[in-house]
Image (cartoon, rainbow over all chains, first blue to last red; front, side, top):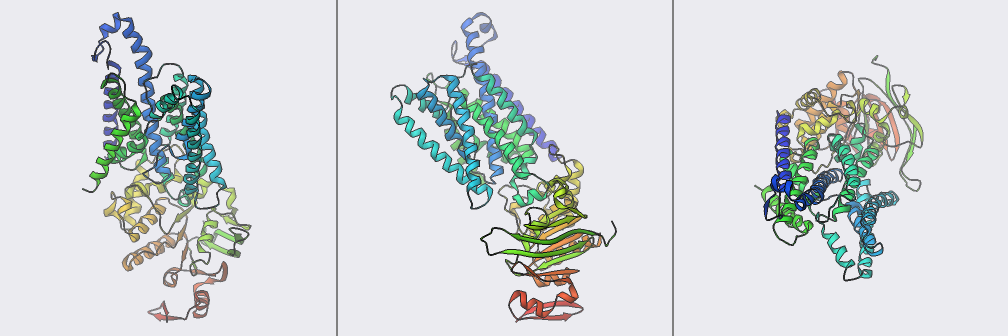
Length: 327
Length: 260
């Protein structure tokens, strides 16, 4: 009975997502504000160009980005047994930002290099956090991870600040700032296939483990007594979650608040069981990103960076959720 | 399995957390057979929890070994141990509002493949476990809303859903009120009567008096004495481990411990 209700909710969300996808594909500002008709698409080569080379890749990236941010946020909240964390823990966000800034300052914003450095240094944030957590002789494993994660974040943050000082203030600094705000506006096919492959594999792993992620919320003592090889499963899923987000954000830049807020919405809808709240988080994340990005594209002629919109929307949802809880 | 066969044995265990640490366990020898209730009794910090962690393979002893069904514990995989030994902690902190049923269903984990999800049958076993501890009314209530005592009953239910032959209970009665403690002890007795092996640690002599077939009295990481209840549970022994004056009274054939 409960299972049937949960499935119906998931199907309903999938329906909303498909609706959002259609809206994203056909709504826009070309040739004028409104919907692109199939007839225009047939006749107008510019329309076709926009459609296939700008809109489609942009929507694919938005879809993957939303799914990655939503599911990895839920995963990290569950593993850290703390509803106030997201994938930005463990030095990943700061690492990716630092990597992108290196690409912008030293490699003339070459898109391939920026992307690879963002993924590489994002992952190295995870790696360094785990390595230094092993060296700490204090507290439990999770506490050590959080502690070393914030230290590594601070390290990359300092590096980022240094690069901002070194950056040419007319072009490079602007590019860095824009990357930090996050946007889907620069998405083209270049670099996207790599992101699609990485993100899809990682999301598939998380989805396959959707029930078992619950067990990582338990005390390690208990999870282990239930036959879970905690360190191994934790590392596998953590790598998948971080890799998915690093890959997607390597093209979009930092998108704030989605990873934090989406899991809350999903738990409100599906309860805490990650068997349902994880797929729920993927769907809600994608819906939120696509809806916000439609806003970014359509509302004003000069595009507002997506990261700014998601932060506004995220904060409003957060306040509504927290306010609603007492009733 | 015949009732007198040893199912779990701790043999010549030596253990210390850290070379510089003053705490260590030495010469721990405990044998348990099926249907038996073995209680480790000792003051806080005497090493009870450490022994339970060694017994389910979470901590490796410096020397000596744990034997499960006659074979070294290391020869079993983590999952195989989970199918044989259940663990009930004193408490568990959870930040998410899992329903009691979802929470107890996690006890089915060792019986599932890594990518398998609980079936209808697993959920039914978990429901039955919740009813067995008398929490049937709270099936869909969040675990975060339970009192300390109710949580301990749900933790026991999760271990029951795990369907293991051996149960380790770590101070698992510490927060129960009178009625629930009685209920809890009844369940444990019934489990033993059904052939399960119970290994329970407690700092409360009354719990030991009410349950144990065999008691292990501990102080500062040493076993003071271990053996059948009648010979071990004496005024002198209890006074020695607790460092405080104690009287044992007989009431309707039951031993009652008083401190004076």
